[in-house]
Amino acid sequence: MAAVWYELKHICKQTGARYGILHTPHGDFETPIFMPVGTKANVKTLIPKEIEEVSDGLILANTYHLWLQPGDEIIRSFGGIRGFMQWDHALLTDSGGFQVFSLSEIRKITEEGVEFRHHKSGEKLFLSPEKSIQIQNNLQADIIMSFDECPPFHATKEYLKESVERTIRWAKRGKEAHQYPDKQALFGIVQGGGDKNLRKHCLEELQKIDFDGYSIGGLSVGESKEEMYEMLEYLSTIMPKDKPRYLMGVGSPDDLIVGSMNGIDMFDCVLPSRNARHGTAFTSLGKLQVKKATLKEDKTPLDQNCDCFVCKTYTKGYLNHLVKSEEILGMRLLTYHNLYFLKNLMKEIRKAICEDRLADFKEEFFEKFGYNDKKAPDGATLE
Image 1: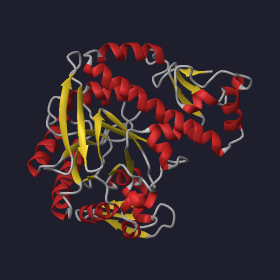
Image 2 (image 1 turned 60 degrees about the vertical axis):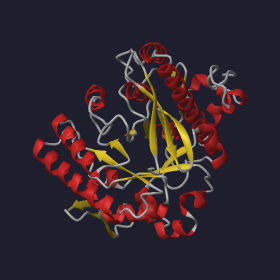
Image 3 (image 1 turned 135 degrees about the vertical axis):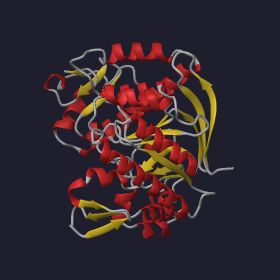
């Protein structure tokens, strides 16, 4: 049996959303699931015990950053990321492919791989499909990604076609280089920008190579919500039903719901922790700017409908003080709350799928959270 496999348990009659179990060497996980991002072998500001409390036990780490610091060979000597950060649960690593997109000013793509300049030192670097897989083998995550190119969503058809064909060739090379297929599941990444025909072609070619799961890359990279949702709706009709489906880099509450409605099983995003570090909290009534002056003397909880220890312990007034003072504790507490909020949201999504009412849940949540207000597409911002 594969290192990681997916068990479909129920399909929502209202939406076609999937409830299932993702089986991994370090735990079985109900899906859809949100995975907090631990870029550099830590979820920023939290310790492993807290990460356990605000996640379902599956988190993500970044191949590119860990390759540069401290180095994958060093992490391997600690027993992989788990031993290095003292995390006893499941892990997923990306491939470094997104950095090909995000560091576009300091890289050059060739058939062999990507030539980089270190984003801080300027040192010359080179990352190939084989090197990406070797690094991930050393990091020892349960689930690893093929090395791909993430093209701009609105790139020309000529560029997208060239990029997709390269991603397919790189995926094949990466699978051939994979040393531990019995211990680490390898996912292929479906690219193609906004071109549905190229997305379909990419998926079909990746299925011929045969991966343990399939990721959707190149979304939430500047396109509109409508464009992203249209592509997800299309892909939901052609993605394999017996393999896990992972939407990369997407994690706002509305996207988690709509993504689930379109058959996505796995999500990750830095949004909840990044928002927290900038003083923004997810609440059951919308996004809250915690540093607003109106909260200075507010003695109510951050979210009266949340049972996390932050909401049971601290007032908006105290959190307002911490954020305005730029205290690290404020970042820690808001990070904890935001991730707990998304963990609970995914639990509610799974329950709604099993009860065949995810469409009703979406309407109720969107109304309550402010997503139906055209002026606040990312959720109502509370004063």
